[in-house]
Image 1 (cartoon, one colour):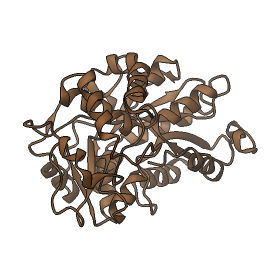
Image 2 (cartoon, helix red, strand yellow; image 1 turned 180 degrees about the horizontal axis):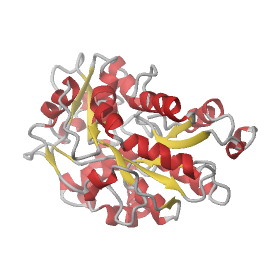
Image 3 (cartoon, rainbow, N blue to C red; image 1 turned 30 degrees about the horizontal axis):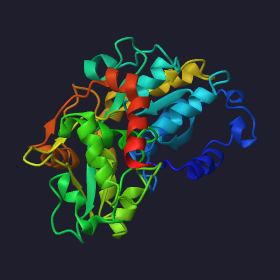
Length: 350
């Protein structure tokens, strides 16, 4: 997930040249295009990700080219906010709570893609403004070569061996970074307890990172021992990063926990190519694309009627065995996100 601002700026100009922000012509000038703003993780490092396959197949089937811009979930929403009076994106894909934030800011229009009736109620908006296209879970990664076994608790990460060898992406900027805060609040039994822990952890933390996706390669190389991430992205990365292991922290004496962190997509209000955006959303939720979520993307189908049996799906099921899945109060998180982030900044000095 390329969430670094400089990287984002370069990516926008290279991957989305038609956008006015890069000095080119407006994306709206080409009727055979659809522009996607997305949290990173679904596009492969070597063109072998789920997005790569879906976008290629979509263009072949429809003749519509996908212009793709990626960054942190918070960055993508803020970009769409800045462009609200002159929207450039047609489809917005982010992790919670940023998809809820986008909805509350009026960035999404109602559209229920074909197949969304097979998506669970918790994974789509009641008012039809967004729906999950790939299910996913929050997690952490560790270096399997330098650490003979994964840590098991949050408390272990306070050990001196992790000093300057641990990093997590920034809450409020990255979806997975925000997830660190959400999980800590759950695991420690409250916001104050979580902030007290994260304050202690700061002595080992390398520092802020706008990009979660950039952390896994550092873990694989041994520059970091531990970082945050998510199951889909990290499992896909592990195919080319042999030292990458996935784990789920527990509070001392407790069970490892996680929560669903789906890639949720919506049609942008005032999208320059609304019709093309609808077609792409339909395509992403179609049976063919959803059957490829685990086999190609290393994630979980958003449709409840798709039961994947491929090797990746089997491995992912085993990975999740014994992990307690809780459901955050997303309405509360979205409502209080700014306050939570401000409190985290005060506690950690970030």
